[in-house]
Image (cartoon, rainbow, N blue to C red; front, side, top):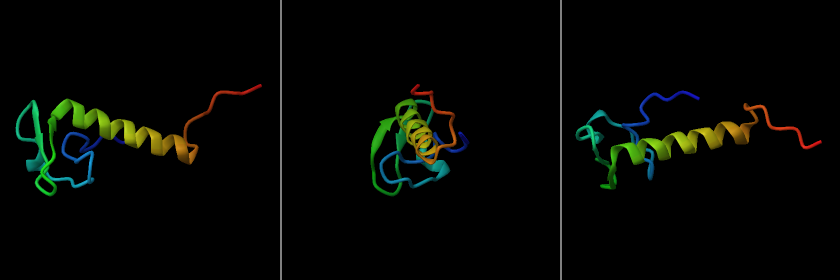
Length: 65
């Protein structure tokens, strides 16, 4: 999974812009206005991307046998 821009992408509407990340702790989406702690926003993006990878089957799934 590519972690690029996870701290700059809105976890609500997917808008990515470098100015979305206000400072180390604050994220404010310039498109939809959502305000989150920057780490929380980034972790939500990582979770969304990891789930997408899992759904595509790119991760070895545990055996059910």
